Image 1 (tube, helix red, strand yellow):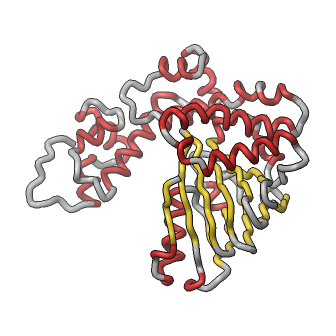
Image 2: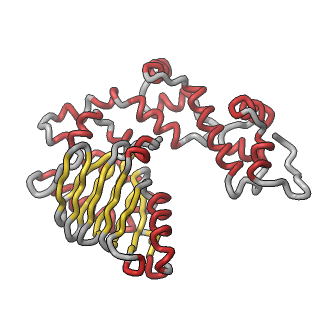
Length: 328
C-alpha cells in the first residue's frame, strides 16, 4: 500500500489542512474534528486499489468524521464503504442507527447519506470503498444494512473480515493481474454478507436488472475518455441488446448521446481551467475526451457554455506572449 500521508513530516500548523486535503482527494469529502491540539495530531495513511475498489488504511489520534448532508448530496458517484476495525473501538452512525465496532468487526455506510464516524481512542481502521453500482443491490437492502455491526455472529462476516483485512495489507494484491482477479470475489463476498442477513439468496440476483441503469452510467464514467465508446460497446459489456440499453436509460430519463457529451464537455472545461490547461493544445484536450473533430468540439463547447474553449482557457490562464494553439 502506497503511503499518502504521514504527519510526522508536516509542521503542526499545517497538519489539519494537509489531512483534509489527503482525505478529500483520496477517499471522500468529509468534515474532520481532531480531538488533540495541532501539535498532538498524528496521522499515517496509506492508499491502495483493487480495480475500482479503493482501500485506505489509517492510524491516527482521536478524531470524529462527519459526512454532512451538503457533502452527501454533491456525490456524483455513489459508493458504499466497508469500515473494518483493526484494533481499539469505533462508532458508526447513519440512517438513524448507531453501532460499535471492535477488533475484526466491520460496518457498511453509504456516501450519499450523512454519517458520523467516531474514533475516541484513535484510529486503526481499513476504509474500503466500493462503487455503489458494482454491488447491484436494492437501495432499501443497502440502507437497512448500514450502521449494523458485522462480525462474529455471522460466519460470512467472519470470513469477510479476514479476507478484507488481508486485501488491505497485502500490497501484492494491489498489482497487475492479482488486482484484476480480486475485484469480482471482493464484490461478491460483500454482496453475500449483505444479502445473507435476509436469508434469501435471490436478493443477490434480482437486483441486477433493477440496478442496470446505475451500472451502465458507472461504466460510461469509467470509459468516458475512450473515443470508441458507443451504444454497441456499452450493451456488449452488460450482456444486453442495444435496444434494451436505450429502453433502460430512457426509464431513468437519460438520453445516451447527450449524457455522454455533457460529461465529456465538463471534463474538457475542468481541464482547460486547471493548472495544466496550457500544457496541451485545445484540440488535444478535446481529443482526449472523445471529441475527434476540433471544429465540432469548439462548436458544442460554445453551445453548452456560451463561450469558446479558447476564451474559457484564457479567462483562467492569461495567454503567454506567443500562443501557438491553432484550434478552438
